[in-house]
Image (cartoon, rainbow, N blue to C red):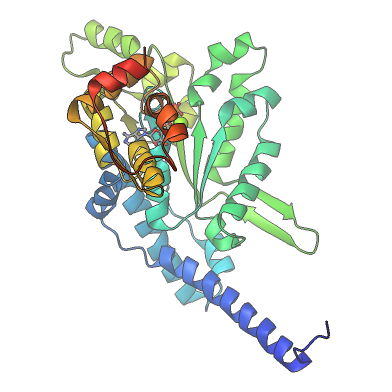
Length: 367
Ligand SMILES: Nc1ncnc2c1ncn2[C@@H]1O[C@H](COP(=O)(O)OP(=O)(O)OP(=O)(O)O)[C@@H](O)[C@H]1O
Ligand SMILES: [Mg+2]
């Protein structure tokens, strides 16, 4: 087929696209620099998705609102001083970071809270497993992986990438005693991590161009189960005759006793302990969270004109089973799937109308 678009038009389209790209890039950076959400705005947004964890959400939303407001103002000032050059502004700006340490059982919403917050701020969110670090024993390769992931998640926008959130999972697995058993120096990994958190720079080779990216402005969240941290704190409390909730007494010393480097812990001043999800929370997640796995099934079935409804007792039954599985909210997905699988296979095309699931039905399916 002959090419019917003239060279002139093509050039125009190219310019338009370039302009659009430019515009989107500036737009994304602006959204971060002009960040004006208060801690309670951030929490209100989290509440739509994350159920329970009231204290955790309060701590995290405050830390995130302050981090991006602080970074935004500092950048605005630097841009004012240097003309419009964001690169120079990013390099010249120094802001104190308050990185976050999350402790809590599996599937209770640690990673999820970070992800939801990043959506609101409009920054990339990257999850990395710290066991990967201890396997190789050093941080170099992982640093460049993290920066590349941030860049991809930022849609190729290097400025936005450098202001993202990195969630490092399984931080408890790099505690020294534990890692020594695997014959890798946990100390080394923690030292490397310290550098990464403070601001490691890396050149990313993209073939045509090379990008120099830094983690200086990246907000780090580390999360871990920290099994047996509770008895450790309680032992210290008993020694000093202290009473009350152990979570209010968690100190750097306790993490050091667990095998964490004091220097590293100093970089994570914001600490929060997440609670195990109760049956009530689990039931609430199905009904209220905007990402609820039950809502997803309801929507899927609606596409076949099937109107799925769970009775209150059915929800409680599913929540009980999920709690029993001990995988937090992750259990909900697998249990709902087991309850609904047969219907999802059988009903589309042969049934329309209301499909009511009660507790008897749930028990029957989960026998
Ligand atoms: N409090 C909650 N409210 C709503 N949904 C939740 C909550 N906690 C977990 N979920 C759901 O369960 C999924 C798994 O949770 P998440 O990834 O946050 O677990 P985690 O606490 O990071 O656990 P792990 O220690 O295993 O990494 C989330 O993607 C979300 O769908
Ligand atoms: Mg997680």
